[in-house]
Length: 318
Ligand SMILES: [Zn+2]
Ligand SMILES: [Zn+2]
Image (cartoon, rainbow, N blue to C red):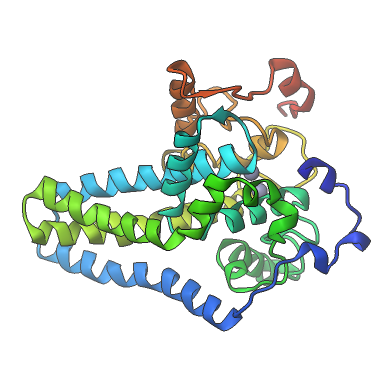
């Protein structure tokens, strides 16, 4: 379906495609809170550093929570649900959808719908977060575009995907519909977990609280901006390995934090591939986890482009 929509002409772009907001003011307030609060947490992190009271347990909790919720987004929301790059059982599907929800990037169905619309209209009118559409020219236009693609688009509702058009399959999926309905529960558990982990690993309530700071707020800050960078930086900076009719790029240095999603030109060339790091040395930790799960039978029908399919789209090295 998504592939076909790419060829929709601009004249057929209509309100039927766009999901407005029932209460835009409230929406903006919530988005603003989620954006600003993690920055405030940096004040506490600064005080901690000043007092030299950063504990190993804080970093361990950060790492656990970052990768648990990050794989929820990359493996769950993105590769499993948006692009159906592998099949799995209901419990595994529920687990990844829950982990992704705990990343606090919005409920699963809206996330998937918007991302499918991005693929349907990449870098043309209709893309919810292109840095290249309607932002003007010159340095000012470039910076405006980057800001819109990174964060600004979260505050407007003029190009959001209509959920029943772009994610009907998920609305009809009882497990995903349930995870979507109970979004706030997973947000809360995603904040309770680092508190409990910090307490358990560090051995005191105080280290539970600093665990919440690192595994909750700092984790949100880093993961959100890494995810946003895929939409902003990876459509402007980096190299192109495959021919695509958009501005997608591979940005290598983001790989450790982006779990392979940074090989975004590869991804736009082969959207259903479970592996984004297709080139030599392109480390893709999300694909590695999917491969491990495939070996033990937790996932199956994993899609990866063949060498011939890759060769057909490969841009010859200059
Ligand atoms: Zn993209
Ligand atoms: Zn995608």
